Each structure stands twice: as C-alpha cells, then as structure tokens.
Image (cartoon, rainbow, N blue to C red; front, side):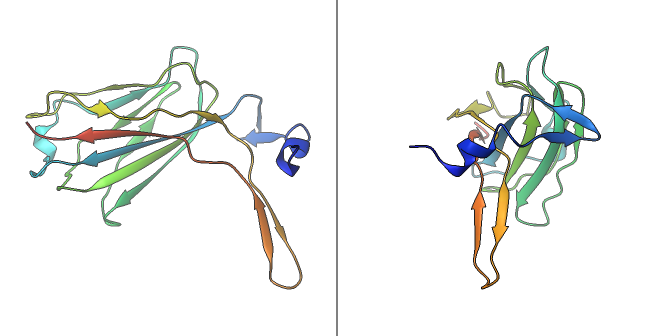
Length: 158
C-alpha cells in the first residue's frame, strides 16, 4: 500500500538555517526519575551528555518537561547535547526531541550520586518524515506526519 507520505517524501526538501538537510532522523529521548527520592542539582557530577556518534550533525533540538515548570537547560554541540544538572522530583520527566542526520549511535554519559546507571529501556529509531498539514474549508484538517521514536531512560537512586 502506497501512502500520500510515500508519494510526497521525494518531493519535499527540508532546510535548516538555509542549509539543505538530506538525511534526517527524529529521535526522542525521555528521562524519568522513577525512584522515591528527588535527584538534586548537587547530585550531578557534571552535565549529562547525549552523544549521537562521531559523524552525526544535530540540526535542531527541543525539550518538554513534566511538570510544566520543570526547567531543563540544554546546550547543542555538533554531534552531542549536554543537559545541565537539574532538580528531578519523583516522577518528574522530560523529553528531548532531536533532529539529527544519523541513526548510528545513541549513548548517554553521566554520573549522578546514588544512581548506579542511567538505564535505557527501549530503542526505536525511524526516519523523519516531514509533517504536512492540509486544511479544508469546512474546518477539517488532515496531517501527514511521523511517529515519535523513543528511548526512555529511567533514573532511580539506589
């Protein structure tokens, strides 16, 4: 079965800051404090680093968090991101959406007091398909889009 997205994907070009993007993958990485204790700013040895591989190039990143007032400070570098230490109360979470040119690697580096390992539980990577929205005069709209691939990292004090 051929979808409208299949027909359009070779006809749509994506530019980021004036530069044509030829390979694009959307990765969504979710971090959750699933423990019973808060993880405080001073518990971090250094910023948490999300690495996408030596040849990767990050085009754009975006962060959303729960609760809504959770402030996540993220810095983009060419092939990795850094998340500055932050307070994560039990069940606080945040997601980092990254448009990157590579699916080769996804490594998380970081040390947090009382946390033996930042554990990833799923990995699902898909090609990014541009989202196209059609609006019809009667208020209906149709969207051609993509699924959000996710890797969820659970952070729990021992």
